[in-house]
Length: 200
Image (cartoon, rainbow, N blue to C red; front, side, top):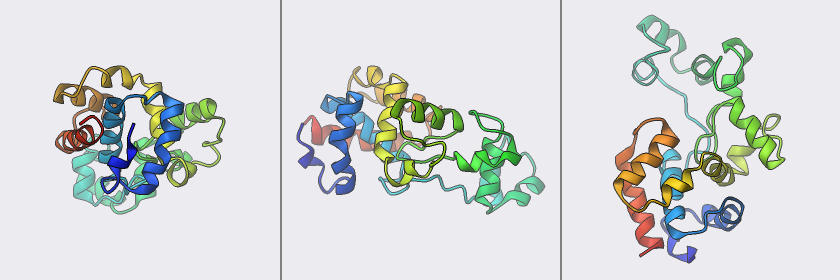
């Protein structure tokens, strides 16, 4: 696979990580790589963000996390306090302890696919032998692409990727990554770009 074609389209630091991730997680066709990079590219804002930005104002909280912030008063009490927001939104789910435990913040989204929650960090630790429970920031600083590859393989996403280069396939992959179709236009745009470069 000619990774040189990706130069100028994604950062060189990301390209350098691809061969290792490909061999570990069976990203062994240009089509699989195009789907994988499209999702990573969208989730990380063009491979820039490696840690979830939870710096929401009250309006943003009520829009994005309406379930957790049904009133303006509650949203105002949490606005612009990322750590407090993470503990509220992620507390008591995804393997995290309740809000007061601080685990919502400790295990917030990191890496190019925003791996979130103690359950995922725990499974990642078990599967890779790297202690992400004790060192959660390693996902952001050292292994942003590797952890994304792990997520794809763990969730059998490559089976979906193999179905082709259509928008329907991108949508089905997106649903597994995102839980819905948030950002689908951007993901589709990324996919078309990478698919053209890699597959031709």
